[in-house]
Length: 95
Image (spheres, rainbow, N blue to C red):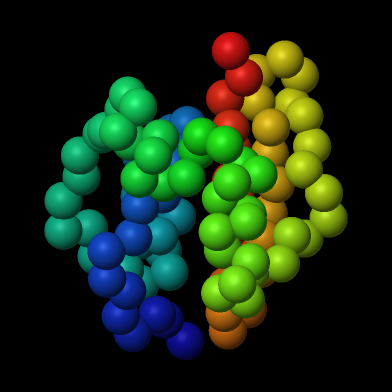
């Protein structure tokens, strides 16, 4: 079964071409692509201040899956489960 519809999704990846190939294999069609970066992008996708993001999402049903972990000296990572079982990965770059 392929996904029937998905609107307005932002995905942070290291290899955009590999990600496009993966989601195309799931039956999705690429409508466009645009790299974004900088502080605006971080704020939009919740990359800054993981603790604040978790606190804001908790009243909406989000629960931390596991714990916030440190990846080397570059970032903090965590996953959370939201409404309807949606799982999101969050990362906060360390300075």
